[in-house]
Image 1 (cartoon, one colour):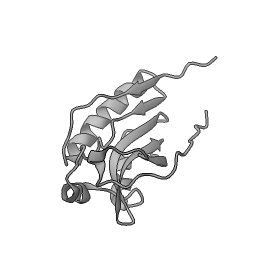
Image 2: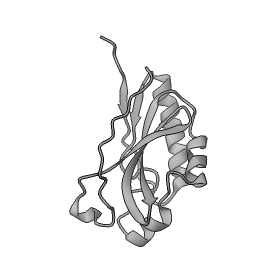
Image 3: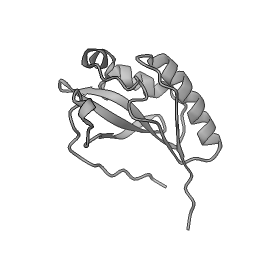
Image 4: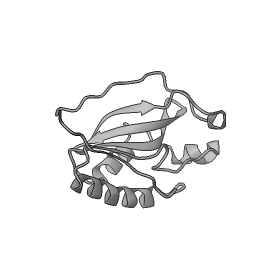
Length: 136
């Protein structure tokens, strides 16, 4: 049986400060990769912070297909480790509590939280539980 090393990150909160989040994430990704992790999971809403004020969340939300989010992905360390990056996503006018799945400098998929807390009413629930497979 093969062993797969999985890392979960407990981070400080960077509220509406994507630059600080990216800087912190880069260090964690580099360290986890060097330690042999194959999957690294960041907390929900990590990238922008766990924002529950709708106006603030809308200002910070990112569309996964946008050039802005593509540039964020490009700034992360290039690794074949799978990174699940928690973020606030904007899509078709709705906000989602999303985990973007990133590997080798590309977005490989995403998961939108389906079971939301009462306090998360600003988010739309996800409708799917996608399965993602690595080439390994």
